[in-house]
Structure formats: structure tokens, C-alpha cells
Image (cartoon, rainbow, N blue to C red):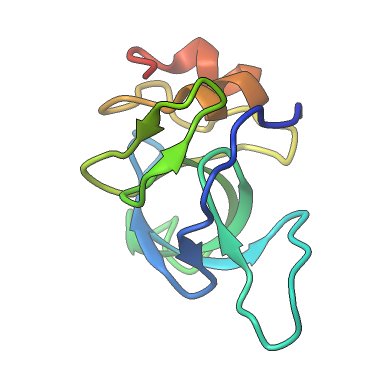
Length: 133
């Protein structure tokens, strides 16, 4: 896991339900925990593009529902700023379910674009991604 070179606004708080964009079997996941988050007292931890999260599967295949999985946020609606001054935002929020904590994706196909920040930080995701923005 590498560091991010841009200032990504953390727009997805704990408790947010976000769709997945892969063929792992999970359709909607709910954020439980954001790995590596350091915050302020009484503030909900939040995740942004490229963050590793722990999530509960809310909708999907019957064997996946109620499972707790690791995931990476690959798109967010809230715009964020890159180091070159460009601002990026996507149409929707999306995450990718992982096999393990090391960053290997469970699915083999990703629907839609993946943010460049997530691909730089997680090489396993960049191998599977078809469109990187």
C-alpha cells in the first residue's frame, strides 16, 4: 500500500451503504470501519478514494450476505483535488471487494472507471481495472 499524492476529500462516513462495481457476488456493502483513519473526538470516521475499508454485505448472493469483507473505495461523488490542480468527481460511489487485506480483488471484472489514486495505491486493483481515470 502506497501513499496518495492528492488531497482526497473523505466523503463516505461509517454506516454509508455503497454499491460494488465487480463480479464478486456482493451488490451493496455497508462501511463498518476505515483502516488507518485518525480523526477528531465525536467525528465519524470517513473513507475516500483509495481507502481500505471493512464492510458488511447487505445485498448480493445468499452465501455473501451478512459476511464481513475488506473493500477499497474506487469512486466517489464528492469532488477532490489532484496534485496538478485538477478536480475530479464521478457519477456514483463504488467499491471493490477484496479476497484478503493485501489488496487482491475477489472479482475479475470491474464495471465503470476506477480512480487513478486507487490504482496507484493498490497494484492488484490496477491489474484488473479496464478504465483508469
